[in-house]
Length: 103
Image 1 (cartoon, rainbow, N blue to C red):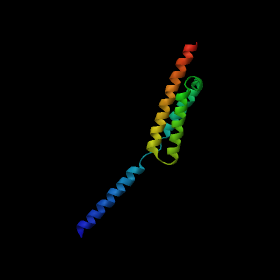
Image 2 (cartoon, rainbow, N blue to C red):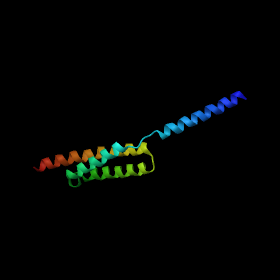
Image 3 (spheres, rainbow, N blue to C red):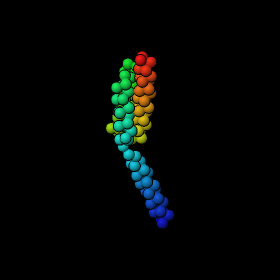
Image 4 (cartoon, rainbow, N blue to C red):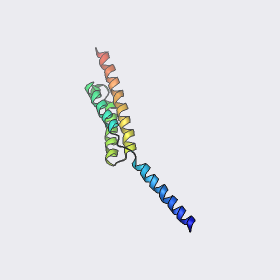
């Protein structure tokens, strides 16, 4: 009888810990902000003209991040936002290089 109670208690404790651990993922506020700012900087640098493919990819990743954010899948939203920032930074670098070559 005691073993059954102990086993049930341990199972309950494990389930509770898993629920708590799953709920601890925080919103990727900083990553989303960083991605948005990087995309704006790339646009301002002329990425729509000089690095359209990278800019479009960055915007698509940001939209994906926003979708995952709204469904509270914060881990995937964070990864997508980081990817969006990286793609936007690539677009920014390409735009700056292209503009430098034009001068």
